[in-house]
Length: 116
Image (cartoon, rainbow, N blue to C red; front, top):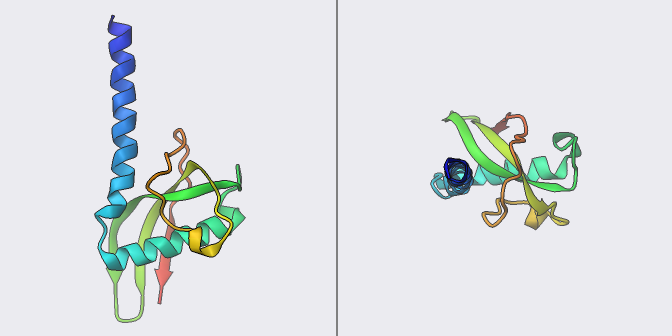
């Protein structure tokens, strides 16, 4: 019985983690969403970000730290993670997809995005 309870606990924790990652996007400010979408587009279009499987969609997981806005630039550190969704074929489809589930524990590296 304790084995079953452990499995249920681990499964629940994993589902909470996945749901939290997807809801983090909805809680972003509009200015941050604009830049997160830009980073998702860039990462999904450039295969250097997807060395293991260039056919999977990278989705927003979380912002690392605070975004910085100055008169000339906008800086934000993001964490993107591979999902079970296939990579989009057109630019307009390279965006955050809340319906995609994150894959295992693999997390792509965090990359700073600097926009002017």
